[in-house]
Length: 353
Ligand code: SF4
Image (cartoon, rainbow, N blue to C red; front, side, top):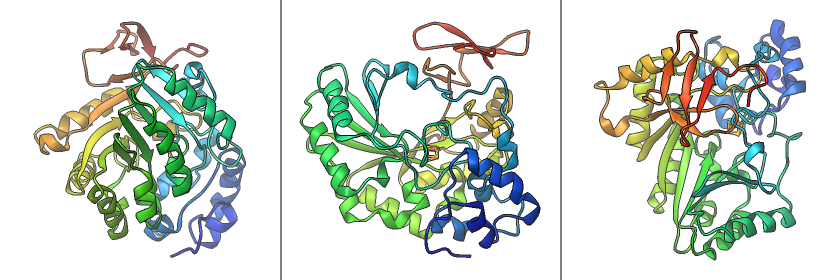
């Protein structure tokens, strides 16, 4: 099946044969709650005859999303608690997130910012808000790295991206600009010469973190798009979310990490899934995740090993999920030590921040 444009309603997904009739009502309720978009590249990739298809599972709504557990929260990694001005998240001293846009080419069913992204989400920063955000960065010499995320920053036009990069170029203490995106795999044709050029900033190192979760996402078109980026001198790293029914299998993960490296992308983060609302059906336990990551050691080259990361709920930063900073307690919960030395219970109690 191919599609001329992105599918954004259950009716369109049904017409494309991607929603069984008996599931339409439940999915419509999900679509009324959370954004839906599946690009033509992904529509072609989904095997409609496979009820367990790992691509469909990431993008086609599921009635299970209507179940929200007490420990799940609208802002699982605490962006809002660390947002001094609109569009900026300043969690760690030397780096900030710059969230210029809250739109994505696709809407992942497990998204950790699902309450912020989409047509009903936080939108795109106004020119005035962007001025304030860049002013915040320019006024703080400790900010060494700016991470453009969102939403997906690569939905912005090359002209707008270039304008942001030119402004960051003028800030001497910013040395690195990093983009987090899914575009090279979900809409590879978008990666053209103008967009690649717009990602560069004079005197700064550009990194691009590609979010991909299954080796099948690396089609010939996606591989060519990645090559255009790397050939332009932009370094690429990976991020993957560990997801039940998508990549919770040592052979699939090994294949995915090798595929990143074969495409000149250094595996970076393997995220334990966040406590986003309606995503319990994707979550593994920390013990299951750790066992999978352990099984990768020795199985694949050191070059292919990602860091297994948990974002501590409430905005307390990341912790290596397979490190000494994570301890299982007698009550079956875990104690997580954040980068400031504070301890947090995981999963958190209802209402805890
Ligand atoms: S691309 Fe990122 S921000 Fe957008 S829906 Fe997927 S996980 Fe969420």
